[in-house]
Length: 96
Image (tube, rainbow, N blue to C red; front, side, top):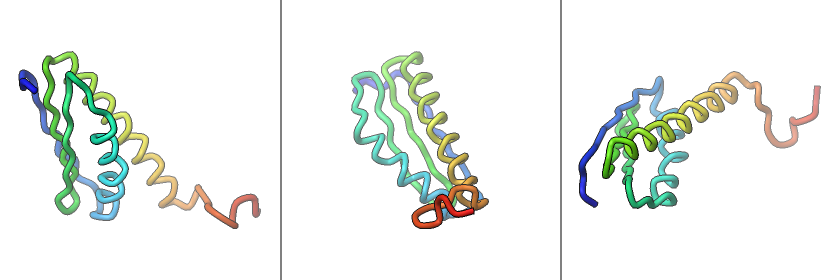
């Protein structure tokens, strides 16, 4: 791919556990979504998750960054709900 536009996002999480959860959730997306105009790599180092975007143009770059940030925001919301105990799993569901 010819790299005309690129960006790297480095996101710090409160814990390595939360960074790992985000990394594991996002990583398959970088392999599943093979696009002609954009390539994304994700890595994790401690409490940081790094996303590297390479795109053919700034429009594709912006769209890709927006998509990944939307997913990350959704993941953060779910992680926070689980952490607060608002989402119960398994046999506990339906018990009040």
